[in-house]
Image (cartoon, rainbow, N blue to C red; front, top):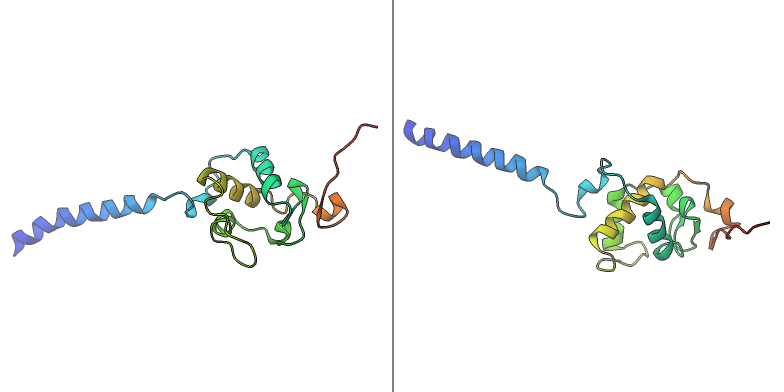
Length: 139
């Protein structure tokens, strides 16, 4: 019986090490999206938001004052929540799963999480929800 336990000990140690290693690996769109060690391209995130999200959502950094969805400056969701909403939809928002690459969806989620609540409110920029800030013109 002692010989059997000695053989199992290395196997158990190997299984424990593998489970710790596997626990650190994450798939795209998983909770590692909140990892802020890798900087994002804010301008690219802003352009993606402006081209796909501003009709519905307000976000001061993107000069967006949407009328249907929540004001993201007030909501200030984390990146994981934004990504979940992009993939699954809900609360009146349709799912956008498959309409963005994983990299685009992650960028959009991280952009919103990073800038929400940091810019001037969209109402101040555009005169109210449902519009975008007018382009600056030369005097």
